[in-house]
Image (cartoon, rainbow, N blue to C red; front, side, top):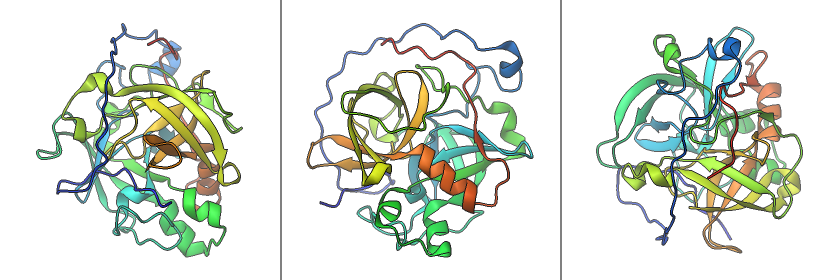
Length: 293
């Protein structure tokens, strides 16, 4: 069945009501990575633009997954392409769906709720959209059209000093996973949707993979708590802290409360071929990955 996207908008939208019961304990700050790597970024404790940051595009709120750089040292934050979509929440074919143009302004924020939109901590512009790109190059592969849901927002120069690539709570990423996940593999994520109204204790998520589909383009994951509207774009890590996916959909069947996660290795390879962004690469976190909850 078709699965709804997990983008949150500041107007009444149909939401799947989930009973979220989780006892999560915040752990101490993670150990730092190399001093050389850390010196290029804002300190972890002071950074306001990082994986898990809220991102608002024309009112729609999604979540940043990871930080990326190009050969010219420009900095990007990734999120889901459907976050800049102009259609319905049920649009799942990125080769047909319409999107906002490149250059559209995107606001980074923290805290707040679906109503107030949170505190602005930075700004950027849409620099790449897999949905736009697939329409432009004429992609017809049904798996690519259905699961390639990845976009990049270039961070404004005035806000570069606020960025750190470390995933809050967990640390990492330690690199990019290039193979699919298998059933039972541990997965970790961080999503601070405005739907939760600032309940930070629910932002870290831990769970397992139910395997891949779409010939490797999608992972089905079950986490406590599940990703909800507003978590779209959230990054996923494996048990070694490697980035492997970006949250795209809230799945009702076959496993209610599970999430569809796009394969980042494939999404990034597609972006490298077609975005025109030179030397695009994932940036590793400056703090060590620690999978202890």
